[in-house]
Length: 277
Ligand SMILES: [Zn+2]
Image 1: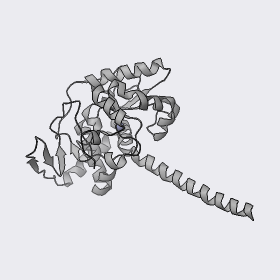
Image 2 (image 1 turned 45 degrees about the vertical axis):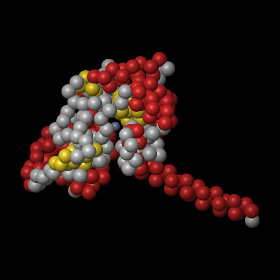
Image 3 (image 1 turned 135 degrees about the vertical axis):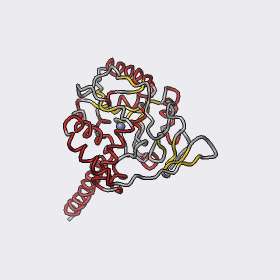
Image 4 (image 1 turned 90 degrees about the horizontal axis):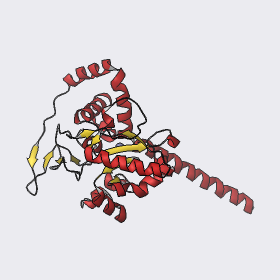
C-alpha cells in the first residue's frame, strides 16, 4: 500500500517538473526574440532583396503615424507616442528600455569593430560597438582567454533604421499587437546604443540561450564582467523590472564605476536610476 502511494506521489511530482520545464523552455524562446530576430534578419539582408521591395509596397499602404512631441518640464527629456525620449544618447550612462527610447534617427558616431572572435566571418554592422565599449570588450575577452575560456561575440550594434525595418516588417506581417510583444520599437533596443554585445560560446553552439549561464564562460562572465565596465543587463528574476526575461548573454557597457555598484548590490539599471516599474 505504502509503495503504491509513493509511486502515485512520484508520478504527480514528476509531471509537475515536466510542466515547469516546458514552461521555462517557452519562456527562454520568448526571452531572446529581439536578439534572435536580429540574427535572422541579418542573414536575410544578404540574400532576399525581393522581400524588402515587397515590404516597401506594403509600407505605402500604411498611414504614416503622427508623432506627438512634448517637453517634460522637470528635465530635458521629451515624450514621443507615450515613450520617454532620453536626453543623453551619447553618454555611456544612457538608459533605454521599453518605456525609454533614443531620439528618432539617432545613431552613435564612434563605432569600431572590437578585435575579438565572432561566430561569423562577414563584415556585418552588428560587429560594431562604440569605441570605449569596444576597448573594454577586448580587455574582457583577453582576461577570459587567460583563464582558458573561449568567449565568442554574436551581435552588437544595430542602427535605428535597421530596428525600424525589423519592427515595421513585423507589424505589416503579423499586426501591431504581435509586433509590440515580440519586436522592440525603434529606439528602444539597447543594441542601438552601440554599448551592448551578445556573447556566447561553442559549448552552446554559439546560440543565445539561458543555458549559456551553465557554461564555464557564462558563469565567469556573470562574476567578472563588471570589472571591465559591463553588466548583465537582464538578470535572472528581474524581468518584472527590466521588461525582459533573463539574458545571460547580453552585455551592456556602463563603465566600471556603475558596473561595480550594480554588481555589488545585485540590482538592474532600472533600479540604479530609481525606476522600479
Ligand atoms: Zn542582446
